[in-house]
Length: 144
Image 1 (tube, rainbow, N blue to C red):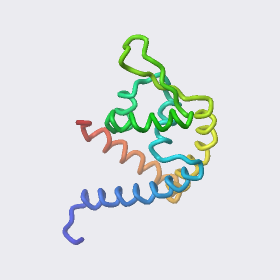
Image 2: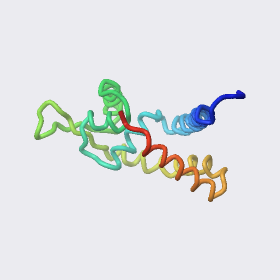
Image 3: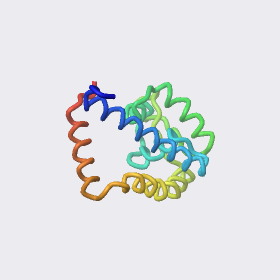
Image 4: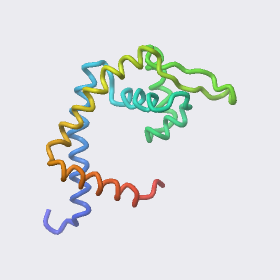
């Protein structure tokens, strides 16, 4: 790839790394009968329950339509419950069920170890450098 700008090569590396890590995450979560999107929902709701489907969609960077189907499946599995928003009869607020909380508490430590193990292939100072660079890039790129 001679002549390819470093920015493009960095982007390709980020995509490859994300793909590799996502494959490992997907296989790990399958052991708990979870998909990556379901895990993301559990993780988001563990941080803040009572958010709307639209808020969840915004946080997951997907459309509200994608969240609706996902919520249907997770409600059927007994992992999430919807409660009518008292301030807006058209909206539902989302909460983890005890089953959802228990599953997340089981999955999260192993998931964190998986991610730490992948990033941990770099020396500690390189991990910090990577974090600093990615944080700086994240701030520099506008959301819209």
